[in-house]
Length: 295
Image 1 (tube, rainbow, N blue to C red):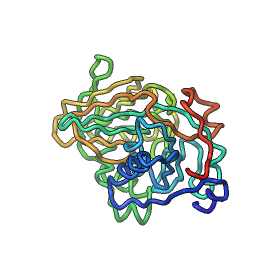
Image 2 (image 1 turned 60 degrees about the vertical axis):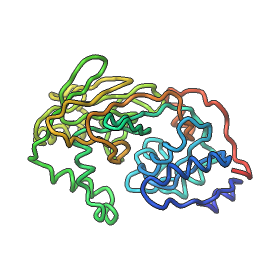
Image 3 (image 1 turned 45 degrees about the vertical axis):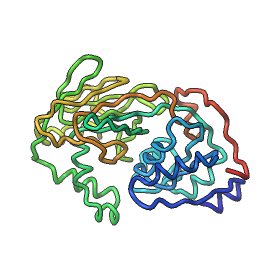
């Protein structure tokens, strides 16, 4: 990837992460030292960390897809090969987008996210994933964790949207159509929208989720019994029957209830393929990026 980028006139400095959470500090330091572009060779979790070190800055973010699924790369149509994504870099265009912000109400910590926040059942699946299995078989580990929950009891909790309260066992607050790299749950939202698509699933056990899964496969989820779909700029999760209802953002566990999410307007510049930009509603980029020897 470095050789491909240098061939195209982009002089990159390679910096390795040294553990969970380190990418945020690395990105923040690189921007402080004058970097005019941050490229992430990693999965959605690493990208999320970098976003939390970049949010509010003017430097653009580019993605070189690695990791288990890389939902962001799938959403943008970058493919799954980082070398091919590196070769496309000079043809990408900058777009200023909003990010989501999750607030853990227990300690007021904030976490920016690009893709989605999930409370309840999907965060429970993330928690059950075997890390060794994930390393060896990739996305299959999530399917194994999901099917291991069949028949389990699920706590329901409150979701407050626009002064109206709903009750569910899984709440997806999404900025993208792609879910997990293979499925589409949210259907009418874009990275360039200034709101979330919220999909709520009712049920105190995992049995209805078999029906929900089939509805997703058949593109019949919207309007299905037990499913509510909304647009919102802010959402709050609370009132769980148990204290261990978890919340994930971009595939990483970050909090438990109570928590809330909101939009941080125009907080990040993302490099996207022109075809993706042409088919989306976009904010004008605040500045145009071009490769330079000092990148």
